[in-house]
Amino acid sequence: MNSNINALPKPKQTTVKLEKITTNPKVFQPRQDGINHGHVSNLRATLKRGDALDPISVRKQHDGLFVVLDGHHSLEAYRQAMWQRSVPVLVYACTEEEGKRVAIRENSKHRLQMADEDRSDWAWELTCEQRRLSKAEVSRICNRSTSTVGRMRPVRDKLEAAGWCDLPKTWKEAQRACRDVDEGEFDEDRAAQWREDAIAKIKEQISGPIGPYAQWKADVVLEAVWEILGDNRFRGGLEYHGFHEVDIDEFDGTVTLLDGLKGEVPDDDDEPFG
Figure 1 (spheres, helix red, strand yellow):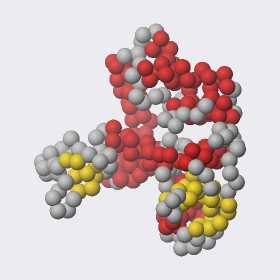
Figure 2: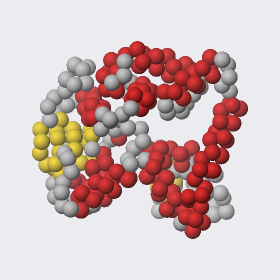
Figure 3: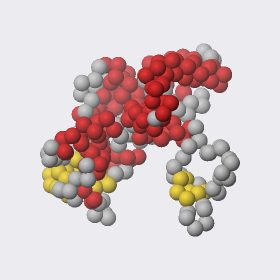
Figure 4: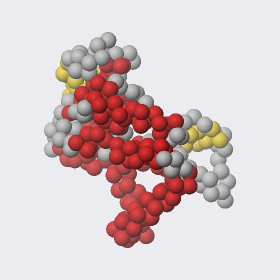
């Protein structure tokens, strides 16, 4: 297969029924922050006028369903609007690996107006992804030099070797963390102190605006945070603090977590998710 991200099959434009479209975000959604519900709301406004959205890029699977390569926000808007007509799509006849490259290429088009620092952060994001691209591909996608991208790889490897499970989100933060590792200054106590300081700073900044709502409408506050963070980061934050979505069997009370683990229903007096 040609590894050039631009050397991909041309799609065929058509329409398909909404129920035939599915997703596999772990494979085909390059953005780490998941669904932005504010963006979905704007797309729904277009649908309310009766206008369809730009075609969703999809790949046809063996089961007859069409998996989204690019256009996850559009699909969510269609679903929330309970769209009754067929949905415009661009169907790629491609392998899964080619589909991943389509997803990355299309995502890059949405980020054309980035500042240089933002592009470096994006290149760092791609460098840290589990699905790792070549240095040349990251450079081409993000419009950063291969030398810049080349410096990111040893930084990533050094931080992973030092025990960083959750790598820094920006390239500047990553370089700072790497210097700390080199100087022997990174340790658990320092990381814990940084976390405490960050929480205190965030609380100071947001406690005023959210205060009235937090007293009587905590769900509104949480929904606002959800829209800011997107699905993946919001769910990840909840899971970090021990909250998980569960399915409780109505017959035997077995609790099944999203990751497939099973347990028992806690007593009413127990702390939730403790």
